[in-house]
Length: 388
Ligand SMILES: [Zn+2]
View 1 (cartoon, rainbow, N blue to C red):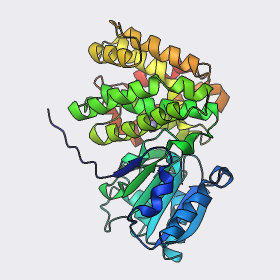
View 2 (cartoon, helix red, strand yellow; view 1 turned 45 degrees about the vertical axis):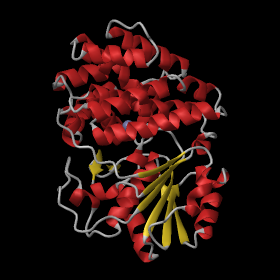
View 3 (cartoon, rainbow, N blue to C red; view 1 turned 90 degrees about the horizontal axis):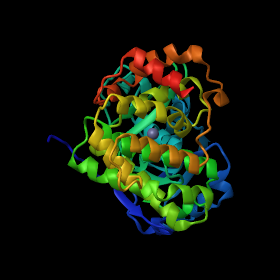
View 4 (spheres, helix red, strand yellow; view 1 turned 135 degrees about the vertical axis):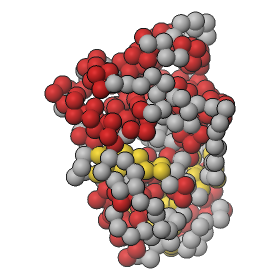
């Protein structure tokens, strides 16, 4: 029973907590506010509210509104230049996982020389040590999915090398995270589902990986039950704040699971899809692969008891077989309207499966090493084929 649990994030959780930002001790005098290139942070009034809070706290700020879904290394470089040119000494990320992940990488590159891939330790990255601690970050998620508000990792796509991979640096733990479920009320049903399944899979994979331990297990099972029992309601009745709260909690718990434990190669196989298909939402890629991926593990009896625990946490109280997990997962995908997603909807073709396998193993090798059953190249290709 060996584990290392270091979770230094101050998390302020609950509906309406954005209104308490000004009362918090903030880690600088001029904030770079990082938001997406879309309209939502502005049209929903969240940006206005954040700016008012920063003014109330006596802080200056400037807005960088250029983050795309599956954020690119080039955007991080531009963001770091913007941060330096404007003399910002802390970052506030307001948005989904893409914004928070990009903000972490910007915080790192605003103070360290060179290129982000000098520090990334996967794919063609050089894996060098950073010289300086990243700028402090305040994370304010407006989605319930990545759990990035609770962890020290940033997933960025190197668009030249087609590498989408995570970079972990203990200095990138947010200084403060405000998780306010009210900010998720306006997310449309499909994205509520896709983001919610991402959060669900963080908890599920954390429970199945060979790095699972008593701490990660505790958070993972709670995360799985929170999400499973509320995601259908949040998708079908987005204004139900109780359901939104449960999803936000499940997402944050999933972030803690990634800190206390590890994910599995389900995430590696997905990153290869969105590395080549930039418009494929991460959650959609995971949903597409999920049934074939977990069926492979179950058919090989990788950890029957853990799949039964998960099936129970997902609502099948008398679960007695690992295949009950697949039943629970299929029912949930169906109830949330995402069971019929197809790879071809996103332009993915079967002749890419070998390329994806090679990419996943090169750029996301670490999660393959967390699988209880090692996946061969042939296994990976079969999972892609069975998902098509
Ligand atoms: Zn994920």
